[in-house]
Amino acid sequence: MSQPAETAEQDAGAALAADCLARARAVLPVLDAAAGRIEQERELPADVLTALHEAALFRLTLPRPLGGAELDIARISAVMETVASADASTAWCLGQAAGCAMSAAFMAAPAAAQVFGPDDAVLAWGAGAVGEARAVPGGYRVTGRWPFASGSRHATWLGGHCKVVEADGTPRRGADGRRALRTALFPRAAAEITDDWQVMGLRGTGSDSYAVEALFVEDALTLDRETASECRHAAPLYLFPTTSVYAAAFAGVALGVARALLDSLRALAGHKTPRGAPGALRDSATFHTRLAEAEAKLGAARAYVQQVLQETWREVVDAETITLEQRIAIRLATTHAIQQATAVSESAYRMAGSSAIFDDGAFERRFRDAYAVSQQVQGRATNYETVGRHLMSLEVDTLFL
Image (cartoon, rainbow, N blue to C red; front, side, top):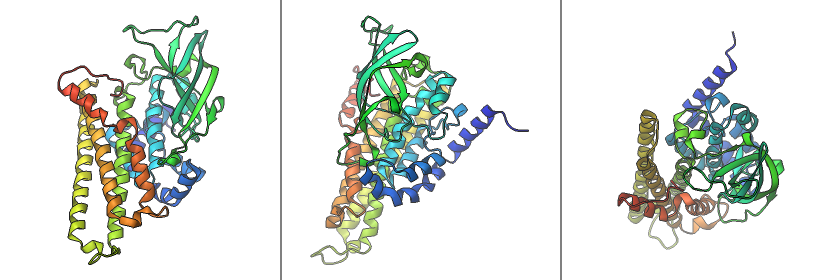
C-alpha cells in the first residue's frame, strides 16, 4: 500500500535533514569544475542548478509537508560552509534562498504549494522594504524597485518587501503604531530585471535589481514574515527570525571560503620556494607560526558559532520561543565568525605571495569573494555596537536581530 502524499513528503523532508551534509559534499565536484564559468557568466549555470535541485539543497528550510527539511540553523551554516569551500557564489545563493523559503511557513498551504511545489522552485528577493503595497479588493497593487536580489537569475518567483498603504494612500499601521509591512510574491516573469551586478566578488550570485509597477498580487501571496502570529506551520525553525537564519548561513559561507584558502595555502607551501628565500616555504618557521595561528583563529570562530547555534536551537525547541538574548548571541557569534574568517582569508592570501594574484589560481577569486561577504550587513562591525549596547542593558534596534 502506498503512503499518503503528506506522509511521504514528511519522510522525504526528514531524510533530507539527516543527510544534508552528504548531499552538499556530493555536489562539490560539479562546483569545482564549474567555478570559472560561474564567475565568468555571473550566474549559476544549468548543470550546477540541476545538481543543486537533484540534491534538494534549495529545500532545506521549507516545511516538511512540502518535502522540505526544516533544518536546524547549525546545520544550515555547516551546509553553506561545505558548499562555499568549492564556490562562494553558489553557497551564497543557497543561503539567500534558505531565508526566502521560510516564507512558505507563513502562507496558506495552496499558495505555498503554488510557489514552492515545483522541483525547481526558488524564491529570491532584494533588500529593504522599499516598495509600496496599496490595498485593493482581493490583494494589493505593488510598486517598487529592489536591489541585491541574489539568485534572481535562476529564481522562479521574486518577493518584494513593501510598506502597506490603504486604498486612499494612508499608511497602514500595526497595533504598536509602526508602519505595516508585507512581502509580496510574484512570478519572476512579472518583474523587469536590471543587469547591474558588476562587482568585485560573489560575481556568480547574479544579484540584480528588479522592479514592478502597480502589479496586482492576491492577498494569499503576501505575508509578514517577522510576525509570529502569521506563521501557519509549527516547527522550531520558524520561531527564528529570517535575519538569524541569514546570519548563520552567511557565517558559514565566510568560514568555507577561509577554509578553502588555508587548504590551498598548505598545498602551495608543499612545493613553493619564495624568491630570495633561504629555503622552501614548507620549511619556514615563520610560515609555520602564521599558518598555525590562522588555523587556530578559524577553528575557534567556527567552534564558537556552532556552539551558539546548537545551544540556541536546543533552547528554542524546549521553550517554543526565542528571546532577545538568544538573538543577540546569534548576532555576536555570526558577526565574529565572518570577521575572523575574513582576516584568515587575507592572511592566507598574503602568505601565498605572488602566487595568489593570478586569476587562474586558487586564491584570487576566493580572496575577492571573502571581502564581498564581509561587506554584507551580517558581517558589518557595527553589529558589535548593537551587542555591546545590549550587554550594557541599553535599548537596541531589533531590525537586524
